[in-house]
Image (cartoon, rainbow, N blue to C red; front, side):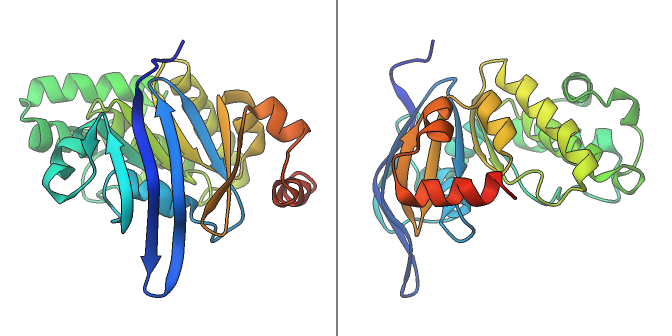
Length: 246
C-alpha cells in the first residue's frame, strides 16, 4: 500500500525555454513507494519534468514540492538529499575506481567516515549485482555495468525517491536487460521511483501508473493494464502503435 500523502506534488507547473513552452500546466502527485513511468514522443517534456524535481531545471509558474518542501533555490540541498537521479550517461569519474566513485558522495555529502562509506558502497554494489567490480575503473566495465554503478552511486546517498532519465538509451541492446532487472528489483523494495523510458515491457511489469506526455502536457494517466490495452486519447493510441510495432 502507498502512503496517502504525496511525496512529490506538481500544481499547475509550467516552464518556458525562451518563447517555447516545454511544460504546460503540469498537475501530478506521486505517493510514497509509488512507481511512475513517464512515456511519450521525443521532445514532449518528459526529461524536463523530472529534472525539475531535483532542481536541475527551474520552472516558471506553479508550485512543485518534495516532501512538502518547495523546490526552489533555498531548499535545493535539502531536496537533493531526498532525491537520487540516474541519467542516460553514466557520469562516473574515470580516474577513480568503482568503489571510490561510490564512496565520494557519502563522504563529501553526508560527512561519513571512510569505513562507513566503504560498507555502504559495498552493500549497494551487491544490490546491483557487481560486487566483484569494486576495484576496477569505469573504462574496464561494459556500458551496462557502468550504469549499474551509477545506480549504486545514487543509492549510496540513501534517497527516498529515485529518478531515472532514459537510463538504458545509451546502452547496446544486450545490456539493457541487466539494467532494467536491477531497476525492477529496486522497485520491489518499496522505493519511490519515476522513470522516463521507452522500454514498454519494463513499464508494464513495474509501473503502478503510466503518465503519457505530448507537447509539454500530461495527456493521460492510467494503470499499465488500462494504458496498454485501452488508451483513451488518440495521441496515446498513435504513440503506442508506433512504439509497440517498432
